[in-house]
Image (cartoon, rainbow, N blue to C red; front, side):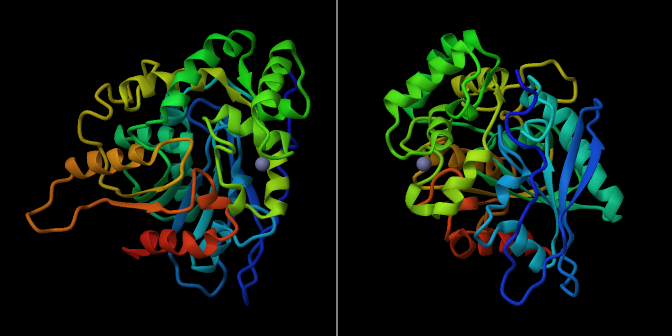
Length: 369
Ligand SMILES: [Zn+2]
């Protein structure tokens, strides 16, 4: 296969909040613990703002750091920087900006996130940081932090899924069928096949998308809907995306290894994260024993999420709170928020997310500042 199916390291163009001049985004490379080359897109805080400390943003699978940065709307990184946060958007090994690899959640949990946290703390001289994590990035991050590998993380906002993944019945039926058919022909699923199918398996997949998806004319949007669940579209509501963002996503979705979907299938079968490699660093009792972290979580999801059901986050919320007992009458440690009218990813790239969602995230991340 071609090494990259989209242009790597595309410049990030951020819309500035009114009256604010944002610093430039710079790329900071560092090695994961196994030597895999990762990077951050680093957006420093706006000068003159209060020091809110570092926050790490973690994307999902088959996308990249840019995904938090649609071109024509006010974004979460821009608003965080304007609020005084030092923003580190991670390209972990699932990023389409990096060398394709057949990774698992375990690999990222053990090798990527501990190295990423160490790099931020080393550069900034801080002792702690906060995190916003999404989808498969949230799975891998949760695996890492619950195994006690990220003691320096104090607050986390996790979107869509975390410790207890759950999908709609149609998606649960479709995934093993896709693995047993398409998964036999290819090592990667790739929404770019909607534009350039390079092989028999890719052409077969493109045909299946063509006959089942008629909701828009954006081939990558339709392939992303096919790959990430059952919906028309799956990852967002078209009403929530402005036309520029809908067009821009053509370049933001690419290869995801079938190895990750196989692991996701194992997790869905038991309803919690399941390690598939034998790293001693990862708890074998993941999702059963109390998470080995003191971080405070807020679990968020869209009410119309067609990728992971909202109950996935409710269960994670309950699991973390059951593991963090409080005195009678005291509020629970961890929070939950479900956004009406939103789905899986439009909480980050929706045209009104800067009004409906980002102020909440900034509020939760600021609570102990
Ligand atoms: Zn579309």
